[in-house]
Image (cartoon, rainbow, N blue to C red; front, side, top):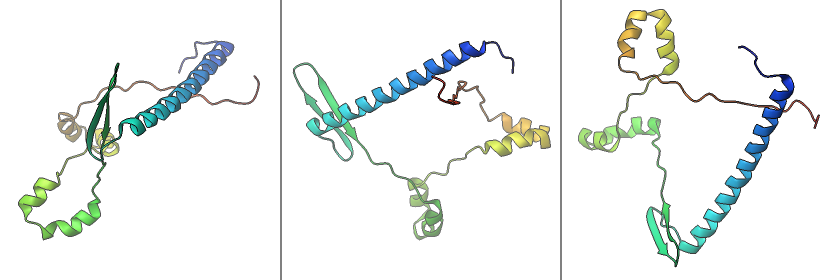
Length: 137
């Protein structure tokens, strides 16, 4: 990696990022506290939405339940159901094992090329991580 910023410029940018992240965290906590107050005022359904109108706002709260499947337990009990019901209630979704996919590129380029036809690859946003090295400020 090529270094382009002077150390003191980098320190200044890292400090600005650190400050911005702290402000963002504070704003997030404030937002969550206000949302909690709105939920207390409007109410919330276990699943679904509740709406209340005031003079200037229409506020909707939405509740929901996150459900996950215990795949080991499902493997034990699905045979107790007719196959049609079991297949309707639980989907079997193929999932890419990225580590194995990347390894296949070196191990078998021909097979990798076949699998790659079904894989969409796009770059992610680059991330920046900072770590304060001491109390110099």
